[in-house]
Length: 344
Image 1 (spheres, rainbow, N blue to C red):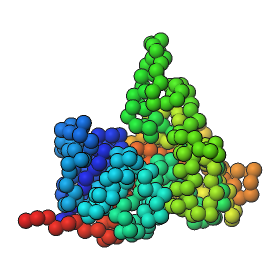
Image 2: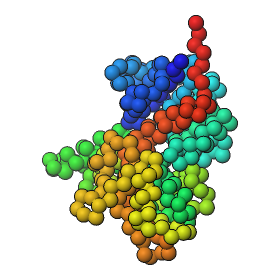
Image 3: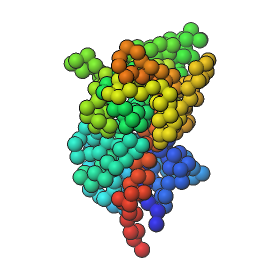
Image 4: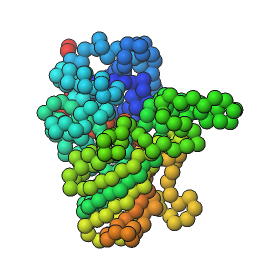
């Protein structure tokens, strides 16, 4: 018997990606339901070769839903995830709402898949921040090999991480540059076209932004609380794909060649690292792909046992939709959930 899956926030960037990936991976679903707010009621959306009509979250009965993929923001998740879990569905939430709750597992399947078993405490599993997800996929095998002490990361995050309106703003501003039109800013505090903005999410008292804080806290929760991490998160004029410049300090020695070999054999990682023009991956190549790509692996001679590398991934897929579906697959593969008996 297949599962019944609900996708909340189905009309957004990540929600649409979730539906695409469910179809691509032939997820064992007998029924998939697309849900969103009332203003999207009746909107048609693609699910593989089928077309689904969006239903209103506010009026939906979750009694026979097995898995709910939630991608509608923290406020919606805070209100609805406990209700949906109380109805007997496992909620896999893509917002930041539940990530820091000690009773909610924060999971990247390539890193800490066993943690999904803790979903029973609240019926909710959290997806990490998109920039954290790809980072820990690359860090985990290296940590297992040589034990990471400290990470310094600078991110170069695409506008899709801020939603469809952000993508539209980059498009409109870019067009305005070439047509001498007026450049309006709504989603971002400064112009994003042909520019960089070293500011994602709100500023905190210590001068870091919330996005930078998320990377630090989530890496500790998913991978190892002993790891020290400092991040600088930058929004760049790229539509899809987050990139990261990562410097790592290890407890034990590890050479670039050893790191390449470890990463080549690691789940979810693809190493493309030729020391020649074009011998690395950019976000353009990573868009639409599932892997976390690692390039530019080299010694960092400024610290003992140091390496530097370049990490790129599709933030809508591995950073959000794909990771959520991999969590659902982990629940099924570990036989932690079963499809509810359907009424005769």
